[in-house]
Image (cartoon, rainbow, N blue to C red; front, side, top):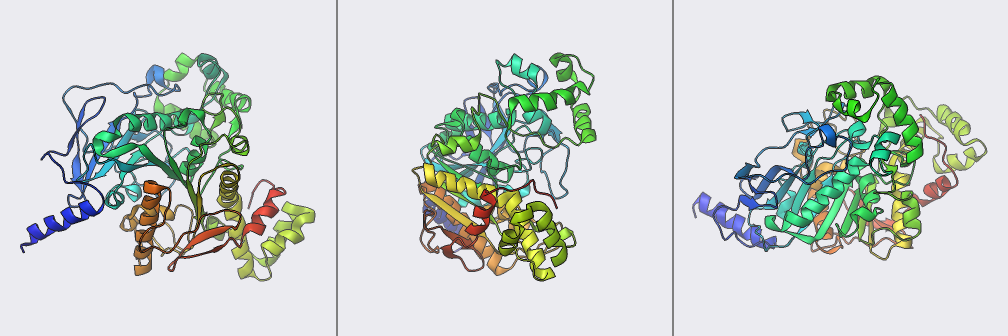
Length: 520
């Protein structure tokens, strides 16, 4: 059989195996949305159709800066959807962020749709909408580590989005609240709701099922997932949720009261010398970003605005008012690997424990022992990770388990990745999961991947997409993943996948009694 014919047959078989029928029309790259026709391109050797840079809301510029997203304009003719739209305006704070778009702008409310090449309007494939991380002040949908070359091959339609960040996404002042009938801030989260509304209206044209949408995200994206589950505005727009390393249940990326933020943000605006919202909206993007940088303001984050959020997120879960959808969530073993940049000794860590926990220090040191320098470093990493990510994510999982009525699946990623350009030590570090989930290991600069990494990536892609399809990550050929519940069972994602009890629960129960503000 000729090579080209053989490749075509293999692709056809793979497409059918994914539950996608072959296209009826030669031009499967032209799709009609509510705004107009869009023409995409094929990627990954023709196996995936990509539609990039589609506007899901009007450009939030001029009079629309710091306002809730408005519907996108319609267009005539056929829109070129073969390149990413601009990423949202931000101060570039992380060396390892790479964007494949043309640059940054406030005109950034774009999304990307990736579908198996055989998908058509009646395919009704599960939809996975990705919310990128970056502390609510950085990141974009065009990062190569979460591109759509591979995940759609598991039989899903993938959507990745931009949303407003930092000062443009979360500024909350009294004037903005007055203008919007008492609500201010949360523009970035409102963008996510608008993207979900766009998906509901349009995704069937790409082969997706608007009644089977999974939201998933990492770090700030995971905080957002837990928050959208608590928001009445997002109710009914998604049907499953995946959270990777983060939840709105503790001090990192806090959800503040509107009053507190109005005072702080109002003082920052006053420092700019403007006297009205009109003058503030007239300031150039660069001027605002420079002012943010000069003041060290990186803590713009969600507020209880009475619109998207009516109460603190944990209170919504405590009363069982969150979205009752299946949840898959967890974190990585070395979320606190940043501690390794500091010298840690047994003596120093014990002094740290005494200063931070005082009379509770002996109990703390039983859970985070420091008998040797090496043990102290391990405990410092563990506590740093718990304070940063793990404890809050655990509280979210526990809350949804206790007050929800849907299945919960918990994971712990433990395979230490090989060193790479931006990670010079081998850890299962914060954000390490992204390339495994998307099958994009080869986008990480300088990493020499091992067979066990590629095997784990393939397994995690299957678990995640199985969950998106049915609400259960289990499937043929995969180690069994038990539901999380009173028996505290979770899955350990390592070179060999196993399931077992949560041996770290005593740490989190200790932190429930009180955790001073983290510092190291």
